[in-house]
Length: 325
Image (tube, rainbow, N blue to C red):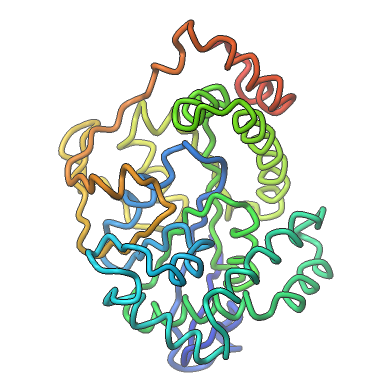
C-alpha cells in the first residue's frame, strides 16, 4: 500500500522517515465515502473493533457537534467525553479559534474542493491547502492528538468525498479511500421512507451520481490506496467482504468479531460517535448484529421511485446497476 502519514511531537509530518527523524509513529486514515443510507456507520464500527483503531465517525460534523455539546456514545456529552473532551479544547486553544469557526471553515473547504476538477493536480492541491490551512491544521491536530493517546489507525465515515481529500492533504500517503456504493434505487427508497420527500429523493439521487463521478476520478489517481465496496456484497457475504477489505486497507481483519456467517459482536467500549451518524444505530447500540441484505426496497409499490432514482442518477446509476430490481 505504500507509506502512510507519520506523526511526531504533535505535528503531522511528510510520509518519509528521513523528513521526520526520531520518535515517528505511523498512522493510517480510512475515509468511507459515497452516499447516505449505505451502512457506513455499521462499516465504521466493524472496522474499528481492533485495539489501536479509532472511529472518527462523521468528523466533518465534529465541530458543529462540539458547539452543541452533542451526546457521545460513551454516555457523556462531547465536552465531557474522556477522549474528545480532552482533545478538542487543546486543538481549539492551539489554533486560536472556536468550534463554530472550524465548522464554517469545513464548509468552505468542501465548497471550494467541489469546484476543483482534478484532485490529483499538485497545484490545485497546494492551493486548497493554503486557502484552508486552518481546517487542514485542525485535522492534523486531531490525528496527532489521538495518536498521542495510542491510536494508530482511523476510520472516518463522513461519506463526503471532499473530506477524504482533506485527510489526503493532512495525511499524505496515509489516506485509504473506500467507495461504499449501494444501488441508487435502494438509497432512494430508504431516504423516502425516512423523510417522505420527493425533492429529497431527486437531490440525493443526483448527489449519488455526482459523488460516483468524483470518486471514480479520485480512485484512479490514488491507485492501490483506493477500494470499492458494494453494500450488496457486504450484506450478502459480510465476513468474506470485510476480510478482503481489511487486507486491502492495511487494517486488522475483523473476522474475530463474527459469531456466525452473518452475525457479529460489537464492543462499544472505545466508540465515541455522535450525531448525525445513523441515529438508530447510535440509539440502539446493539452488541450483537445480524448483517443481511435489505430487500424490501425491491417491492413493486416502489417501482415509481426506482424509475425516478435511475433518471436522477443517470447515467452513473444505470452503468453501475443495469439489472432490474
